[in-house]
Image: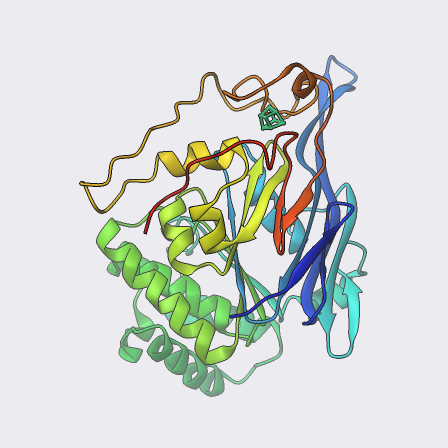
Length: 350
Ligand code: SF4
């Protein structure tokens, strides 16, 4: 896939293609309250000014450690949780709708186009419902009242995700983790969505099953022209499926680039550290491991200047005071670091 993007004032703007989704300065802050009267004493800035475009038919990987805000971005985009500020423009037919402010009747119709695949295939399926009821539920809610019609569609969906259509009346406990995740994918596909937010869809699965589910997601993307926002902490998984990757740290995107560029030529020290922890399939190729000191910064008490400075091996004095902006350093490659272009960082070979 060939994409051309540019960044203006930290915003990824599209030149050649129409974006399916445009996220602008998205924020989700959770108040910290204390005392009998629940006095607000601070804010946990889980998402703090995230902007990006998501193009029709692409897969954007969103990576970062636990607490980076990546899952909150996915949920806020679908308005499973309400954003504190910002805009989420979704292109529907010839016009754009701001999901962040859409009234509930508009939101209901948008939900057909925007679906989610959840992380835990054990917790996300109701153990008291059959496969027919689980996958058929979104059809029923959206007006497919006739049971026979639902059954036909559910059989079709089961075949599409590689499950036997005769499993219709089984309960979730009769399936393995990988099969349950396929049921979750079938449910997400039921209403012919255009955008799917996949929240760590393979991290709860065995490694051998992960590849099968990733391949299935890729096949479905090609077949139905789906657009994915793929949230994950595992960079090898993200590399397998994404066209571009956004790296998040404490509520902000710190680097965004086409997948090969990010893996071969990272420009942010945090990306370099994440890449250094990815196992290399070729044991003859040695690479240095960048060990980060300290813990991920607390989004309720973000460090001054660059939030990464307490852990950054390259930090200078100004990093403690000045907040770096997201700047474009090459076509489609943006980074939030004062020293981008100066540092020679190590990526992954191959
Ligand atoms: Fe490190 Fe400074 Fe760049 Fe932040 S701005 S990543 S502290 S070099």
